[in-house]
Length: 71
Image 1 (cartoon, rainbow, N blue to C red):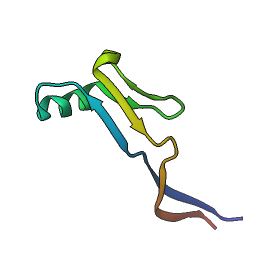
Image 2 (cartoon, rainbow, N blue to C red):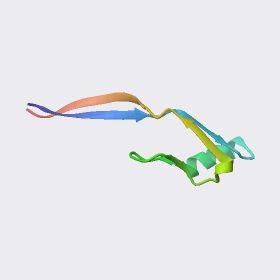
Image 3 (spheres, rainbow, N blue to C red):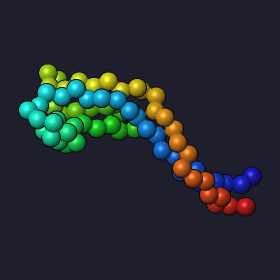
Image 4 (tube, rainbow, N blue to C red):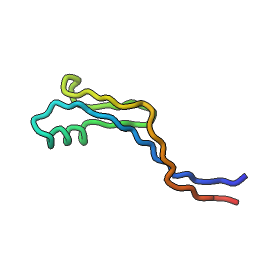
């Protein structure tokens, strides 16, 4: 049996609904205060009244490359 490394990308797409004064501030809030960890959940350090999110829980999967590592 051969062994392969399969470079893979998972893409989650959705929206954050943010209360902010400007578009730039909204982008900054999402950049600094929102994230996702594998095995965890989408999260934010902003107050619940200032942020909401809507993301599909099943990502798209892209195979980026395959390399044989053993014969």
